[in-house]
Amino acid sequence: MPRPFAKPAASPSPLRYRVLGPLAVHRDDRALPLGPLKQRVVLATLLGSANSPVSVDALTDALWQEEPPRTARKNLQVYVSALRALLADDELDRPRLIHTGGGYVLRVAEDELDLLRFRSLVRAAEGQGPRPAARLLRQALDLWQGPPLGDDLRLSPRLAEEAERLELRHLTAYEGWAEAELELGGAPAVVEGLRDLVERHPLRERLRSAWMRALSGSGRQAEALAAYDDYRQLLARELGLEPGGAMAARYRMILAGDDRAGAGAAARPPAAPPPDLVDFTGHGEELRYLTDRLEDESAGRIVLLSGPAGAGKTTLAVRAAHLLGDRFADGRLCVCLRDADGRTRSLSAVLAELGERTGQVGLSGPEAWREWLAEHRVLVILDDVPDERAVRPLLPCGGRGRVLLTARGQLGGLAPVDRVCVPPLGTAESVQLLAGLVGEGRVRADREAALRIVRACGGSPLAVRVSGMRLAVLRHVPLREFADRLTDPAGALDELTSGDVSVRRWLAHGWEGLPEEWGRDAGRLAAGTGEGPFGLTEAAEALGCDERHAVRVVEALIDAGMVTSPCGEVTAHAAQYELPHLIRMYARGSGLGTPVLTSG
Image (cartoon, rainbow, N blue to C red; front, side):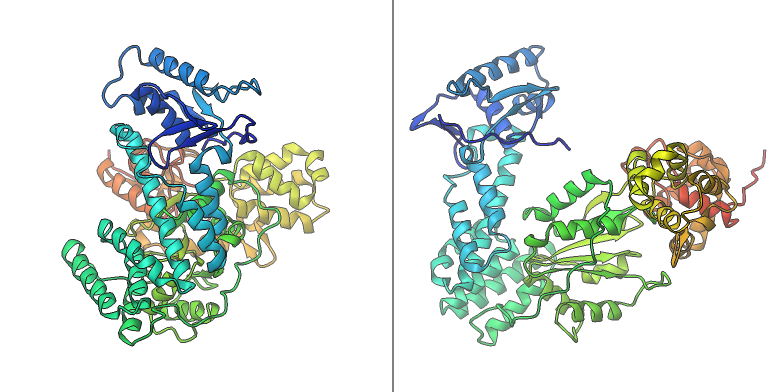
């Protein structure tokens, strides 16, 4: 992901850019002429990614729906040159539109662009009480001057998609404002605006729920009940679904005559997540993406971190939870779906812990949990998910709560889920983690041995951490001697143990959860393929089958988190596959990789 350029300070000769309505640029009180349509498409595309690079390819796609002309690059340069002159800051002698490595960046201060100001106000409202939240969100909504970008620019498919995303952000902000006003007793002030939006977005549950609450709070209980019944019939007719738990709960409260319509009794905040690691290392790109997705109100409610045992999924999830503390006013908690022996916990046991952690002791079942989750802005980490059945009843159907899953497999039966694969640590990151545990001086004294140690750990943060903890205790053992131990296949896993933390036991838990034939197949791949990537032909030879059957085996093992793609994007149809180093080592050391003898 591109790193945004630093935002410039406000200009003394202020420009004002507007995209939350028809595209416009004003210098002082004078509207600037923005030129022909294609030049305005370029400007709108750059403003949509203000302060971040936009590639030439992306600008070309925005300008030409079909095959671009041979003069496309020259035409683009003409439009950029005209915009650069139009937007130039004469007083500071500083170009606003600059060229950078294969693209362009438009530098814009927050107070110059309505979109940046809108995002800032929405972020500031998160985690606030109803009164400041209502004030900040009202300021954000007042920035809108009509449909974003106007009708003419939406002829560009790229800008049409951007306009749809902006409209969704506006809708989410309006819902937040209406809910804050309802908390303050302002039902009559929001009821008609909500009705208009419900007519335009009839299937949006959060919007419909707020409208029901506004109707009830305005003394119009019969209309509120009718609104629910209309929604129930619409869902059944269009999607074959029932309303979510939060909607059903609100309906019951209105039916019972409770004008608060779902405000609910106060409960103690959920417990905080586990302590963050002070020496958290690596996975910076995944962390940035993860926090962005969890912050984005328009994104899905469920994110999955997947990767083999020891990849650092839980550590990454916990770090994200700590970074997002101010975004989840009702708390953050982490519950593991396996017991200490690696067995899947029962649903009743998990619900009991969730109920205790959230002050909802005696949850009647998954439906009651989902109702609570929908009503609270909370981040719930469901850690080490063994399969879809174990977690499906606990997932939100809408509302305010977010769920972050960690699992070794892909959990392909869950949808919609935003999936993030956690790759191995790089060599430099692994050495940095090791040095933090054993001391910088010890690593500098024998860097070659340190490199051998981390390479033997195969990029697994767990294995590097266990090595470091063990060496921190065994101060008398030279790094070179420990590296020799790890490069001995017969005893390497025995060395990766420190106190009650054992890499072998961690791997065994994952292996025992596999169907017997999958474990056998993974063992055959470990025995019949060399270290590093292998192709489908090699897989078929190791498994003793044809390539059609080998594809199905590899697909199953990818889904189980036992096989990955070295390119980072996990797909069974990639040209190359890879067994993570520790999984390969465990399979070979446990005698699971009996080679298959094929005839001929």
